[in-house]
Image 1 (cartoon, rainbow, N blue to C red):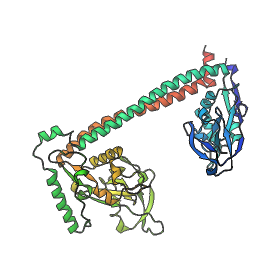
Image 2 (image 1 turned 90 degrees about the vertical axis):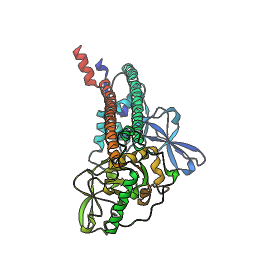
Image 3 (image 1 turned 60 degrees about the vertical axis):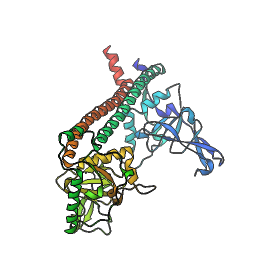
Image 4 (image 1 turned 180 degrees about the vertical axis):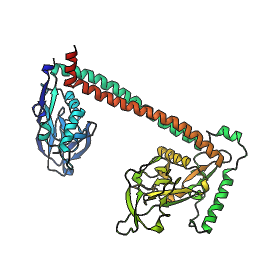
Length: 451
């Protein structure tokens, strides 16, 4: 009966464990971490001599543990058996659970309810980086069913969690298959397999070799007219660099042969002069999308506007962070860009920007792009490396046919992705709804009244 449900403070259900130990320099200690998904797991093993502190605290298997800084975002859980006797810091209070009043699984589910998390967030509202201390945590209350009912709820929730786990595994499998499908579509596109029938029906189009000759002539004229600078000759393409055999009429070339690439302006608040203008950083560039919701501003002089502006159709590529990550600027208005980004413009639209960005994504997912990186620790994609990148060039009319087929197929992939994301969201909402229903005193009371 609902009259058996009681409201109890955590301070009645939990007793803080404070087993302090002096660290022995020769003993190896287990250190733990807590994720925002409630996973209490091994962080590392270290000898006492390599730990900065002289003292530590011990956690026991079955203890409830939380992070003072992140408990309101889900960083709490139960210490698993394999981490018994693990070493924790002051920032991870742990508590022995009174199992005569509450089962550990029920405690974790109740603390994880949105209603309880909102109480925790209220404790940090309007303040900076707040630590939720033990006294604050233990002052909060839970509504508890009796142990017999808790046991029934555990069995029911475990069953639902098992089904949810199976569903999440299936969703992950579907996402993996979808990624492979995207890769396969693009791989067949750049190898010419998607347009095999198109070539048979259109045998007399201008070859890529002729296209490249025209582009080289146009580039030479731009250099002569002093519109672009003359670049150092690019090395010839070795046979080993070619990733696959090309169809007749196609040609391998280096990106620098057919495009004009440049880095943006260096941010220097003391030296930069001119008018404040919004600009793109690498943080604004995701795959296939440029996010302008969080732009910063930098000073640009009038003579720099053309040099450091991104125009409609330009490709913007990350130099660092996620080197090679790229998107197309599709807006009519121009925007400035920072040195952390490359701007790529093809000469006379000799190569499809859409096809190129998809090609970069394919090579990033397959690891091919890493051979163009520089730097041992922090990776970069320099302008020199970018110019050396080799790409397969189809005849111009065939490029249009490829893009049309790719966009049609990738639209289907996007629809599948939307369905997978929806299923994932529904699974999460279902679990939250089940927990809320199971531990909601009001809903239980309404059921009793209706009977």
